[in-house]
Image (cartoon, rainbow, N blue to C red; front, side, top):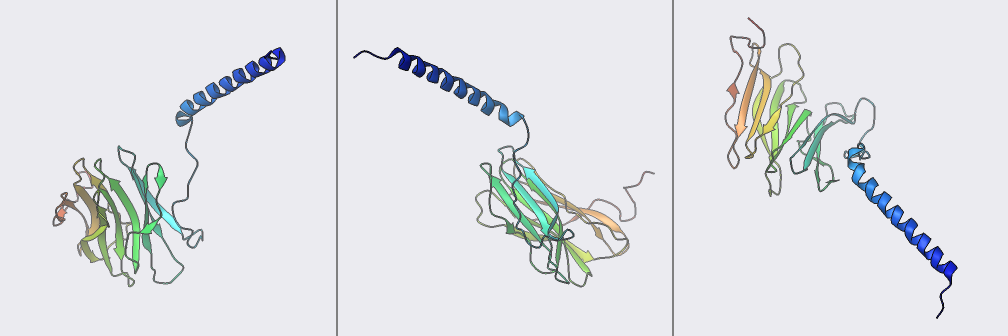
Length: 220
């Protein structure tokens, strides 16, 4: 059967244009990761979106394999709380549903997070009771394969002295051992303490890093 030359030219031109488009698309895909940030994704619930409430302080950590954990404090309008800590975990480039990792009574504040190379995750915060007389340094941790988070109170004491903003920074080494540090009122001054959680073990007793009679934060 005799072919139409015009049809062949048209087909050839279409194939050339398609090949050029595919080549351009491939170049664009290769260049995209280095061209900027991805679009933003909401990972916390809407809650009560008042400018002075809702999600406020937050923190995020990412492992070498790309797993991420984020946490934030979530407030309500209710007098006396509850203020709690929300969290979400990202795996495979997708954020999971948000969940509340702290207790839901009193005031859980100022989250910090960490994730180890082998997948252990930790979220910490400072808890204060409704009467604002007692505070606790708390950490929730989750090892790879664990079904649930485990929460521990590392130290507690009265709220006193000059008002300071309390945090519980956490770090996790390559083996999944967790270290936390914090500042707490000992009845006469604020001191720095730390504790460790060996993988598969229990939290150590707090160790005093500063004072109690020498202020290591100031030069001699």
